Length: 499
Image (cartoon, rainbow, N blue to C red; front, side):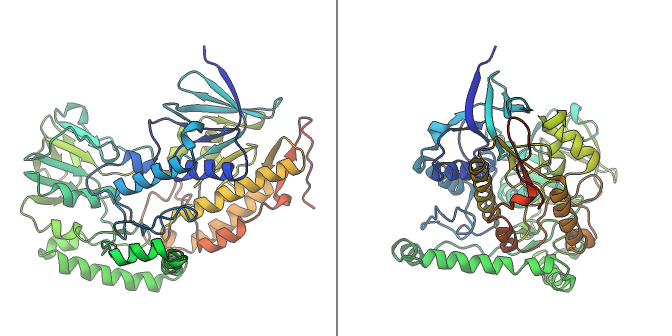
């Protein structure tokens, strides 16, 4: 039988979100917390995704903590290993290892209304009893693997890009890649020269823009290291360059249609075969799905050993895949570049709130609803980081995470100020927030662009993207609006009103 372990705050995950929250707690002078991590090291998605070519598609100097800037990024768009090394360095600087329990997977959490405490169950059998629960698990951690007909018959190797099998030598192999997600766009050009044959099964082509990546010049790295404010100024410039793109995503379709035409010209310029170029050209407005960046993806299709299949998979056999066009492709390995469970990842949550409210069931039946993507009515002292409708298609999510960890810290201070036990968002405030953002999303390219994407839930509602400028989110999360919440004491008496 496991132990009961009491603490003030349980933080789940050690990616940017979980680490950022732990650091914020330390800044606040709160030492009574633990971070639970199912893996054996820090890093989140940048620890797990080690496929060839894995890199960030946001500039390095933006995709990092504002309070822990790195002057010596080797490239303008950092590769996976460098980002992971950065995160481990930040963890070491802030001494996060002594607060972190590695190899501990959270299996569920339940709110105890008598104690006003969260009971967090883990795979080790131990239960953590905490006043606050902060979920920094992110959205990109549960690989999405399609159910291919007959896959159980296949006798070759199969793996997802997020679980890359580095022990399997692809040299000279016949490889099928399923899907054209962000990872496939990065690893396909890297493995194509090694394999004998590569067949990419594409359902919907992504829009891909040229990647303005380059090595950081020694003079720039020296300037950032030695001149106070130089790197911060560069970071601000990058922020506003990225931020301008939000104009196109939110009700300015003309801008994105123009960008789509430029991107289409890039395809025809890069791919020699006109029929093939046509198959690689999307028929929806840019931005409807995640816009990707790459300089080597399209030229890869000029190789004689790379083939594109747009008819889909009819059947998997012991050593081959049969397409819907009847053609049989002999393959030694199948690699899934199919992304992650995003909106449906919440179906895996086992979280019980006030009056026995089941979070996964609540969201399945009534839609995913939060306040600011952080709080959920009926679940006191529970905070999501990078939760629903706080993802981005145009700027760095680290900016959003920093806004959220400061917001959580302010909520904890509000509870302390009123000598309460817990804080719970009011349903009226939550509904106002969701009504507002869904109205904005209805006019955006994600809804009007003519595609179906992982931004949408099973009802076709966008539960992923923040619809607008990130500086507006920053403004709204600078301080907790007490009128949007009730404070709970052990007597369960609300201590704040709507007035």
